[in-house]
Image (cartoon, rainbow, N blue to C red; front, side, top):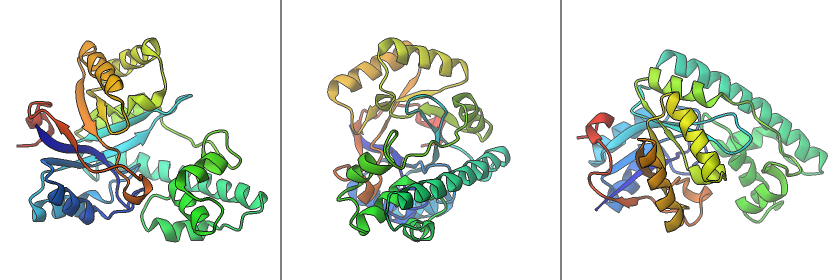
Length: 274
């Protein structure tokens, strides 16, 4: 068995570790592979790969994109080339739409009587992507919530008092962008889709037809039963099973870096890993 993690976030999106700190943490934990998969940005990949080389950690360039659906649907991309033209153009657009959403959320919070400003949120983020976890952190700092979970439940989650829907790309476009950037596309945390077997199989059939390569069957929040179900389903659709914790540092309390897997879990050469 080896310890890997193919789903982690840095301060460039909504994590609390810098890319360099993630590489150092992976070295301390003895990880054989670490992939940085920030939301909607490749800004952290260059410093991440430099830090991995310095610390003797095998690093993998990645990204996580949110797709349009009436449920949570995220697509991970691995082995992408940062700076790929069309991907970066669409990422710029996604971040612009995120900024509009963040402004509207802050307006809703102020209408509820909460003293929050978008500049305060940006100061907390410290990165290229400003997201709801940063707003949650501000709400905690100001005493409006006791935890990230409470902030989302009361104000930020779908259906909560200050929720604002965000414009997203189709899953098919997410997959296409990842493939055009030289990468492979993977369905992130299918557990979060909250679909029954029939619904998940329909989704996988559709995405496989669009070029989906893998499925995050081994996920930090899975029960053993869920992992078994997803491994079986990945096999049924000819998808590679990947493994990730969805580590966000202080924004994911209780989540640690690293997932134990068999050494032959993936065709490592296909991912550029030796």
